[in-house]
Image (cartoon, rainbow, N blue to C red):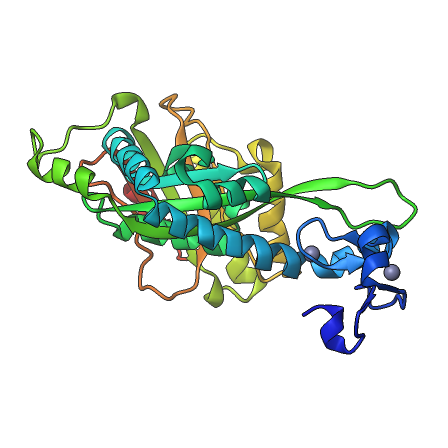
Length: 337
Ligand SMILES: [Zn+2]
Ligand SMILES: [Zn+2]
């Protein structure tokens, strides 16, 4: 889709639509600046920066998202990598319960090396149990998808992979301001089969069929506060959601306004109606009554499932309480918690 296709012959046009600068291929090779993430060429840094605000989304997401997909297929096809990830997924599941194997690449180049050279260039790998997934890191769509996958996958034969690639990009700004850089993660997930060796070890190993319990220090309570956002169109209905969230948290000694002003503000904005979106958020507060920390997830649902299902571990390692904060909780609330 280069400028040549647009009828410029062997001339290249600056990709900034408001700029008419052209150059021959030879000249462009010397003087044009390419986009940091893709092959777009600009006559100058100024044009590159000016176009970035419009170009950034398409650019990052098409290129790096394609890289994520290649990383996932490499994980599946490279035997050493698959074995390594399978063992990690198994250990993670046994010690921490359901979760996701997360692979982080610090740059698209590193992801590229992994795709070309395999296991020896694998990125930073860790196991993230599902309540610790961060909606802010992966965006609300992927977060919801991963939560759903976490409930469904069969840990005896499958694992969940989550690939994130860090992209550094020039922040949009005026042509005269100093260049600013910002980091952004582009990510994708998939469900893969565990490698055969690990599956057969599970099937035949000592204690097959019975699972060791998780280590006590990883046991945690998870409180999910969800509501059908589609039915919350009036300020009054949204106010109820906001009140319910605060009430439920207050019962655990958490003052949302004081302890999480940013989340409180986001709820207030949602109630005011200046936005119809409410992005999922994960808090890690401490219950003042018991002194134990817990995970609280506040998230909208879109009414697609009758009741949102959340992963409940087979060995009961996490105590998950789901509250529909869209409903009139009334006196029922206290008995539920
Ligand atoms: Zn680009
Ligand atoms: Zn230009």
